[in-house]
Image (cartoon, rainbow, N blue to C red; front, side, top):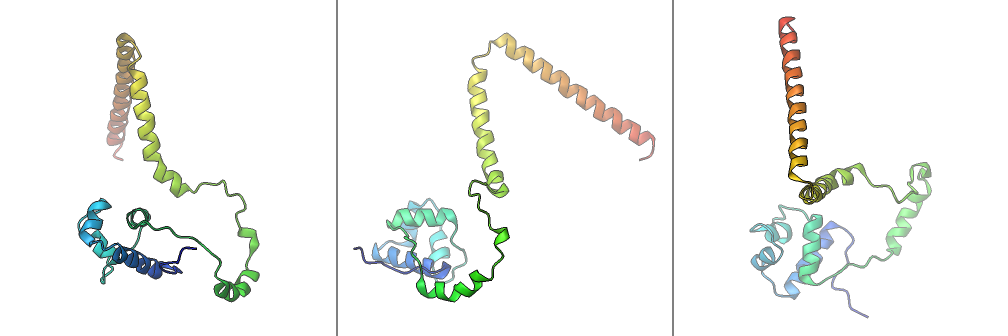
Length: 164
C-alpha cells in the first residue's frame, strides 16, 4: 500500500498537498511556471504565502501532472456522522437523477470549440467545390447582404422622417 502524502478535505488542504508534493520533488516556482506553461509568478500566487490566486481546473490538472500525484476519494466516516441529520431532512424532489444532462454553462463554454471545428471542416469541404460554384455562392451572399443593408437604411430613413 502506498503511504499518502496528505489528506485533502477542502481547498486549503489541497493547496497544502500541492506544496508538499512540490517540496518533495525539490521544484522551484519558476520551474513550475515554465513546465506548466503558466504566466510568470503563477505558482507563487497559488501556492505561496500570499495566496493571491486560487486553484482553478487547469492549475489543478497541471500540478497533478507536474508533481506526479493523484487524488483518491474515500468516505470520511466522521464527517458522514455529522452530515447524517442534514441529509435526512433534505428535500429529495430537487435531486437530479438523470446524470446525462449537460449544463447550459458547459454548453456555452464548448460552443467556440465546436464552431471552430465546424468552420475548419467547412473550409476543407469548400476546397472540393468548383471555382465557378464558389463564385456563384459568394455573389448570392453579397446580394443578400446588400438587400439587408438597403432595407436597414430604408427603415432608418423612415424612422428619422417620423421623428422617432
